[in-house]
Every structure is written in structure tokens, then in C-alpha cells.
Image (cartoon, rainbow, N blue to C red):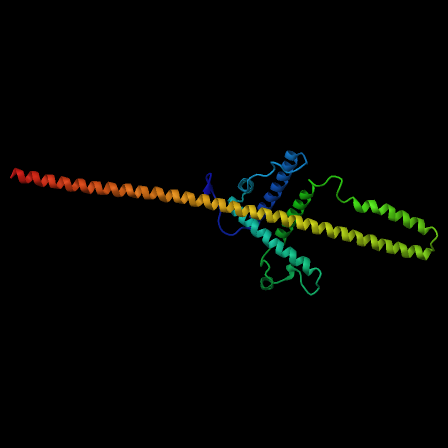
Length: 273
């Protein structure tokens, strides 16, 4: 399909085109988040969202400037496929990291990936670029909620624990102090690991929820475009039928006129005899 004089490229996406699309989506998320914060004054998202087709038209324009000549529908479809493949690989990598018997996705052969219902040819550079986008979206999603409420619980508890350990260590033996020091370090390490794991899990859940919402909006956008295309096709068919009807009517009138002229001519000739 051509729009505004543009001739869109068809066929498989190249790595260069895919990286341009990912970068365009990264910029799109950033500008939308900044606009949301600016319009809402940090207090909500009122008036922050634009129609889905407006977003993808912006992405198309951004890609077009970088030499990726794809339509907004092509960009939308490609992005949905990329995120679906990314989530499959991310989920597999997370589960295989806890199972020594499961090799990493990047060490699997093509047929082994297919056997595990994984994408056959997701490239590492594409996966890393998508990871950056997902992490950026998760970070941006937390900003409006930010302020002083999040992440303050653990630091507040730490001083009281440290103070209590300091008081008890005055009368403790050197060996006891060393044991308690090691235990405290291990406990602190476990707490940090637990907090880091919880933050990572929350970021992943937020990113998945955002992606699911965008996928639903994308489906609605495709449905609307399909309806518009069917309406345009119907109007075109009606115009063709009307044109054909007029052509048929003109042909019939011409035949009738020819027949009448033939009869009149024959009548005149007969009278002249």
C-alpha cells in the first residue's frame, strides 16, 4: 500500500531495519512518558494518551527518516512478533539459569530451539536491544509513582540493627565478634539479593503488563484499519458497478437508436419506390 507518495518495502526485515524500529520505539516511549508527566503535572495520566494509530504513524515517520521504509502496519506487526519472541527467550533463560541441565538459549541448535517452542533465529543484538527497551519502560512506569515512598523501608531498618549489634559487641569476645561479623555480612547480602530479585520481578511484571496493553491496542488498531479498508473496497465496488451499469445502458440505447434508424431508412426507401 502507498500513502502520501511513499512506496513501502516488502519482504523480510533486515537486521538494520529491525534495529531502527527498536530505536524508534525507545524514543517513542521516552517522548510519551515525558509528555504524560508534563501534561499531568506528575499527578496522573489525564490527557496523556494518543490514539494507537497516531503512535504508529509517528514510529513509521521516525523509521522512514532513518532509511527503514516500512508502513505503520508493518512496524506494528514486526514489533508484536519481536516482543513475543523476546518474552519466550527471556522466560526460558530465567528458568534455565536455575537448572544446570538446561543449556542457554544461545547454545541451542536451531532444531533444539524449535523442539522447545522457542524462536529459531532471534539474534543476540536484537535481544539485548529489546531488553534495554523493556527495562527503560519499567523504569519510566515507576517514575509517576516515585517520590519519597518507594524503596525507603530497608534503609530505615538498617541503622537500628547496626546500633544493636554495636552495643552487644562491646562485651563479646574477638571470636564471637568475627562470627557475628560474618553472619551480618551474609544476612546483609541475602537481604540485598532478596530486594534486587523483588525489584527485578516487579519490573518484569510491569513491562509485561504494559506490553499486553499495547498489544491489545495494536489489535484494535488493526481491526479499525481493516474496517476502513473494507469500506473503501465496498465504495470502489459500488463505483465500478455504477460505471458498468451506465456503460450497459449506453450500449443498449445505441443499439436501439441503430435499430430505429435502420427501420426508418428501410421505410423511406420503400416509400420512394
